[in-house]
Amino acid sequence: MKKSTKFLSILSCTVMLFQLCILGASAQNTNYTIISPYEDVVWSGDNAWGAYKGTLHSHTTYSDADVDLPSMVKEYYNQGYDFLANSDHGVTGVEWNKEPAKVALYTYQKLLGNKVEVLTDEEYSGIISGSYPLYDGTARNKGMTCVTGANELGFITLTKSHVNGYFLPSNVGNAWDGGENGYETAVAFIEQNGGLSHINHPGDWLETNKNPNAVNDPANIKYFGDILLKYPSCLGTEVFNERNGTTGYDRILWDNLLMYCLPYGKNVIGFSNTDAHFFSTVDSSYSIFMMEENTQENIKETMQSGSFFAVTRKLRGNDFEIGPKESFDVINNKDYDVPMFTLLETNGHTITSAAENASEIQWIANGKVIMKKDIAEGETVTLDLDQIEGAEDFLYVRAELKGDGGMCISQAFVIDDGSEHLKFEDNTSFVDKIVFWFKSTRIYVIFQELIRAIA
Image 1: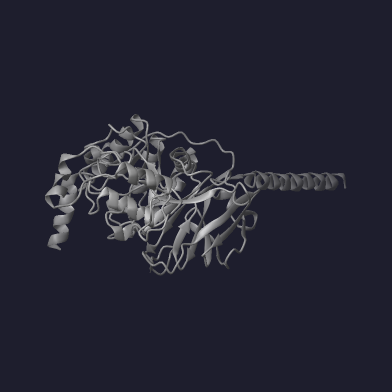
Image 2: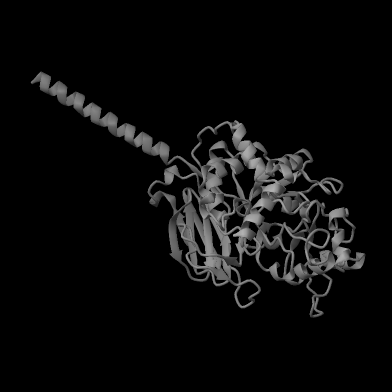
């Protein structure tokens, strides 16, 4: 009897210990914090932040665009933009009434009869203050901020390994040709000169039109991820670019880069830009920055914090889980307003959202859709991670709005479980470095184009 009692006592203790271990593991797994890029945003009330429309990547006849600088600036102004960074190839942007550096390569613009000029002082003053009249003669009464120091490196546009640098000194980066050596050379150059950067339209370099699954190739993910980890000033990648002709799958690459970089403590910011060379693409892909005030300093801080949204008006359908399954194109269609978040607030393990001009919201975690819901105008929707199986293993969650006017996506909400971050070490093999370098050269690009022509 005593032996039996002793056995039952041991068994009972064992069961209790097992339950405590399970509960302890469960408590540990759910002991995480949602870090929101929109934590400081004031969404409503007298002190509500503004939602400012802008692009950080655009061109003029100072490099390879078809539109001169005054005309391009005025077109953005008339289409309701609140800020603009002119980032000509190998030409560091200055105030729009000042002459930027002239690069010999682009003297062909004048040979073609294109204007290469700047705004008058009066035009510049009127545009940044909002007093300059719109095309119809009415006053806009809202200024457009000139973001200086932007440059798309390098200036030989035939290569595809393009990087946008920001807040560079006006005498830095002009006619810079390091792009022949790949993305990293440009990113390192920008960091050395005190600027910020992001990788431009990676899908073009990866040739995802020919092979969409290139965005899931571990070698490609490692290549871009290592650059992001090695250089703190490289903030992220473009997820939308112009009409998304070569970048239709860059959101999927972004998800993969988030999963690659977050264990090291590096968030990856998703940028959206018009990359306009013509008037027709000014209404294509752009950003909405949430800021207290529309200033260059606030724009710089918002780029780093990620308190903004990426918008596109055109995107191809695809078979990847996150979609969209059907293509849409409402560029220059004024009948449809873009979907936009009007609220994104966190509380514990929940994120509450509201939106306008949207018919659907989907939440994505670790590259998978975890919630999709049809929504009405202004409807409040709450994502409760405690109700999502496996949420304790998420590295991030992010939201996408869809509507008749296009798509709007949030930045990533980081799931922080308090684990110590990994330490980055560059272990890329010599052979891989040579391969990725060669894919960034003009010779390689010319070879690609010749193969296409023959095909």
